[in-house]
Image 1 (cartoon, rainbow, N blue to C red):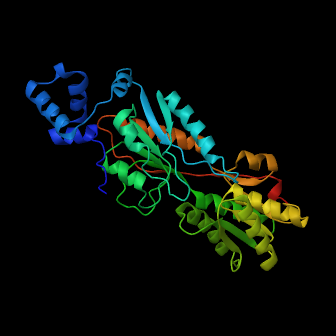
Image 2 (image 1 turned 120 degrees about the vertical axis):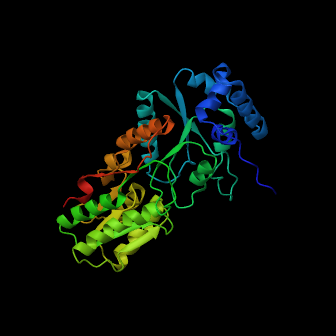
Image 3 (image 1 turned 90 degrees about the horizontal axis):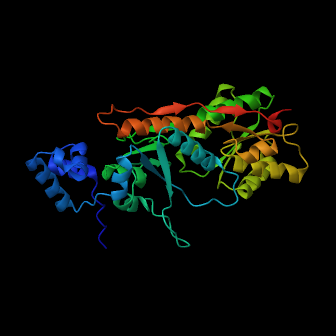
Length: 344
């Protein structure tokens, strides 16, 4: 089956006609501003590409207002991960202060056993609604979202590094997960722990690998062994509980650093089943500083999501401004919120 051609964008029309985006916009909204030959050339390109200018988008632009699309992933069951919820709220607030509005959308329903379409929902918005740009939150190497949007020349910024994709040129903002986990491991070391276990995600997660690197770096700095002290599992509470129980039985760690609060909550359950007290008996640190962590007294690495949102909106404004300079990536530092679960 032939792959459907993506909808033509304003950038496609500009390239075909040999004019700027602003000229195409003028041809649609204020044709009297253009010379007849230029207007004819743009109109011919519009017809050849079957470009459909969006009425709602024009309406918004004439009022100096912007809609920015953010695709929400499917809900995650059996996790304590609420970082995306906090990020969305922060992005909405930062956008509102800058005169933007966030349009949330999904990639469509996914049948049981099928993988979601990584570009689901994007083409619909590019074709028929008032979206000036996108915020992308999945940035692994070769991610079809970033690749597809770049091919469509749709403006977007990313929450997350392009990692090993040296050809990527889009603006991005990220948090140094390795530094956060290293700080967590150093904190446990200061509490007197030497057998510090790492509980992370299954191979393939670049974010998970980055966070693991922080643990490994700290352990190497103190010449501490990591043999038998790590596990890679799915990001669920049950998986964290089972992995923690196995490590406690086989390797006897006195502390755990986890790639997420979800896994850390699993460790807390494993300790409760054994009658052990977090902090006093076994130190536990999570990642994301979720509301669950705050309620349960779990030490956790907190991402500065409000600052991430501010930088993303600034990158969006630069991206949509005419004659914008090339944008560099921004790497922010997390902080460690120390609570009872890691203090002896």
